[in-house]
Amino acid sequence: MMNRYRVLYAVLPVLSSCASIINSPFGELQNYLSIFTNSDTKYSPQCPIDIPYSCSNDTPIYDSCCFESPGGVVLQTQFWDYYPAVGPDDMFTLHGLWPDNCDGSYEQFCDSSLNIHGDIEQQVFLKYNETELLHKMKKYWKNFNGDDEELWVHEFNKHATCMTTIKPSCYGNFYKEFINALNFFNVTVNLFEQLPTYKWLTSNGIVPSESQTYTRQQIENTLSSQFGQPVYIGCNRYNALQEVWYFHHVKGSILSENFEPIPSLLNSHCPESNIKFLPKNFKPTPTGIPPPSKPTDGTSLQGFIKLTGNDGCLISNGKWYKSGTCATYHLVKAPFGGYNLRTSKGYCGIDDYNQLACNSKISPMQFQFDKASKLITFGGKFIWSAYEEPTKWKQVPISPGDEGGSHIFKLRFDFR
Image (cartoon, rainbow, N blue to C red; front, side):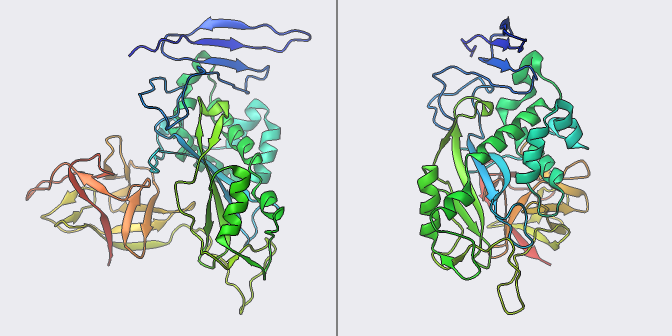
């Protein structure tokens, strides 16, 4: 269906005492008005005023540059790492901005051609003389292992490459290498500064303490009253507060920063009472509160992957097979949460056909594993599917969610 809106791009160079606006047509399929400052880095798209908020449309929206889909639920995530202390003592740190699907599932590592490799500071920030943004990120956006740039690259490659409204094609002739990455980081930091979790908590008497505890309702109500909607809070296994997630819909492009708070799609992962909010200078003692487990990589679990309610198992290429030997799979703790999955063929991930594949060309993707149920999930999807059952010698691909076919099951990891 041809979009009826016409695209205009406006360039606004700042001259000594006046400004001029130059309009140039770009095509019939994108409904943008793009405004750049004299630095060509502050990108501010304008979309039709009747464009709906993400995840609220009744009919399809065909302009992916003016409507974030399928990742229309935008999460702003913050961490409180107290041991070892990460970031300022009076501030939660920024973890990321995630485009989840409207049903709570999510995509990841969507377009490797957009990935950042190498020196992100030079390629993205110094290239455009964005030293102020870089300074803020070094203060707010912290990695537990001290390598902040590693986290920034990971967050862009995993999440921002799934955002449709910052694809290079949405910039038209004004696209420059990694300008979309710079814009993504700028939007993420701007939103973080509007969500001062530490200030909101302490202003209501919820302060870091080695002895004081709080109820889940106290913390949730305090944050929700400021945010305007219920939020998600996460605690570690020692009942210490560690995460806060804020959920939004967005109107128009992500770069418009027109975010609308919505209720959390998840139930908080904290007990009802006795929640600790430990200070960042907290030092655990042998008889005191144990430190939280730090995210680490290299921790490997070995086992076979079975399909619940079905015969057979997964072989080394990621396919379902009934007539051979089950492959040994390794669950390797990933640096930023979750697990990487690999076999003798290489790492496993979801390929361009939305199918599980394991081979040397696959880059590591993050799977979730619940040790209690032994179930492996991907992208917030708890079920897997296939279009048929394998016959004696046939190998059948499987897909996360129910899009792979009518055969529905879960993946169970059986330890060796």
